Length: 183
Image 1 (cartoon, helix red, strand yellow):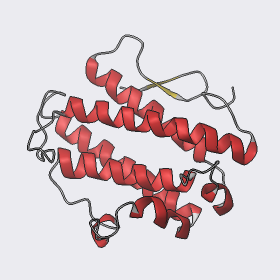
Image 2 (image 1 turned 30 degrees about the vertical axis):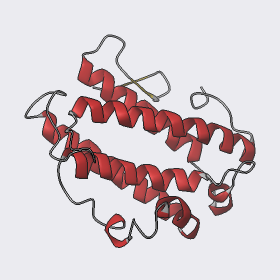
Image 3 (image 1 turned 90 degrees about the horizontal axis):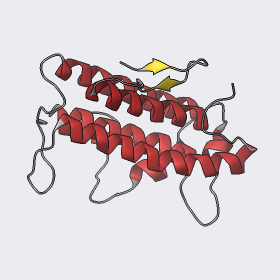
């Protein structure tokens, strides 16, 4: 179970069990990304830093894809659905990053929030049956089958890496800095 600090920002439990700690850590990363990308217009979501092509909008769309791929496809064995099933990934790799520039802020925020909601529901459904040691219904490209635990750790890592990108880009857009929303 995720707890919140005195300002409502998610925190993993200070002495929780493994599952609560993993889910709380993931929720903290999600909340930080939401804060770092929140309240921006299309220009802010399309801003880049230096020679990098990474944008905050691209991060939102990419992480929505990651949520759906890892939790829907890999973990639950379900098709990730639209918009992911409309792209030819072999012919158009990186589409999630590039196509975000054509999406409105509302579309990007909605796409990401809905992917997170689906992921939370899938994880809760599967945790009702077994713990984090349960194996996914999909496999890795090399044929190995990860556990829910491994998928949660991978998502925490993916978010942490991209939240670092969001820190730098957001600071370049409007000067917003910090690890947590203002107190």
